[in-house]
Length: 354
Image (cartoon, rainbow, N blue to C red; front, side, top):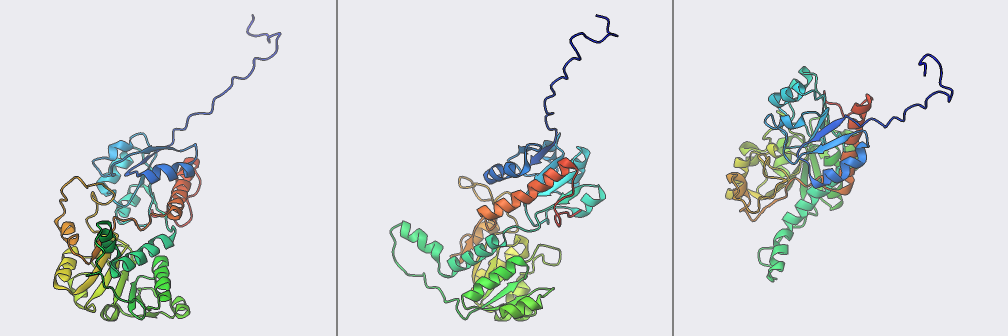
């Protein structure tokens, strides 16, 4: 047939085009089973998730090869060396699936043109309720009683606690989580005092809460609960000098970041009997320990091993956020930011750090 003449049968049908396979891949580091469950439901078909069971560091950044973004968690180490590796591989976004960002070198990320997002808020009730659960369990020695009963030991020896009613709790940091903890413990009949460099006077007036300077708060509180981010200013805010100003027998609760507390000073205070008890969901050297099953290994961290020997210390492995509601919130914001990058759309309002 003369190619210049039209076909007698009419124009050839247009070829059927298959939808192009997405080339938008995200490397999800330090992935847990709940990430594999929640994240895919929030990212959609246009985002391919490459789940990796190890943490992101400069040494493991090569695993992000071919991805457009990485998704990281609290113990990934995104320092300058790691960021340089990511940028060299064409990564344009680090999406934190958490609120805290002390493990990210934001200055280097901004300098090198790498966008960093986080989850500015998720169910604050998850963390607040866990803080209260730790306090109740430690004070009434529920964790010890549970283990005893399972061994058919029904003795009550050594299980005496104290009423929280009319005791004083000092809330350090009155953001969303700190306010909820204050509200819950106020409902127990506790006297609530607080410290925050940016006090919310209207909230305090409504709740019947008094703001104090940190020294006065430490000296009069029967319980101190920490709810501040980790920054250079808050690093080791609980140290030997601050513990010496605390009321003898105080219970200390930390569900924020481990490095708020100087662990060596904490152990000294526990050995001396200065502290009545310590409840922790975080630990300053938790990387490589928390979130891992080390039950068949010898624990190499001597400070953590020493902490675990005290009968008045209760530790959980950074699980305060672990509720269905919080996991859903985290996946929703993280997934929305990944979809936004894929589509060239704006990120979730308030989530951009660089």
